[in-house]
Image (cartoon, rainbow, N blue to C red; front, top):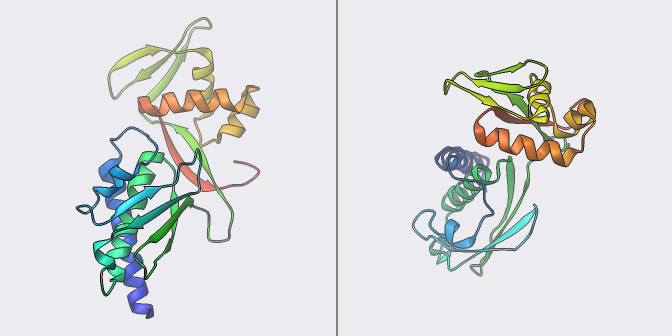
Length: 209
């Protein structure tokens, strides 16, 4: 593949990943299943998703209309980008896809959590949304959602996590600061994220995350 064509293919991948990620962000988080992916671009191919409780996972494509005769790299790149963007929106983590085409018509995508260019893994950082303010009288704790115009009573742990998330913080760092188990912090952050009270970014892992 020429350098010019490779750049074109990579640009298609990125465009469709960004587009499908935005389109699917309203969907609840869920594990990917083949029939959902089959609908992308009008049943271009059939997707067999390897059952796995965690990433990386393998997706096999078969009966692809683009793989009948001369396979076009631009169509494959568009398809890979669409799959990546859809799964990023559904899983809530940045992903990378290692695509392995096959002349026999059964291609493979290996989906994993994205890393940095120098090989370091990325870590999720939670930060309290700007429209959320915290209050406490020493006995009760609450959050003021200025966007919705409501005051909501919250648990002491939720209040402490939101307080810690005034700046971006990882689950591990928040757990260490508050002296609680990381699983409990992650569960609360998932709930806060669904409420729209925290936003998540992904940065290279470091000892200070």
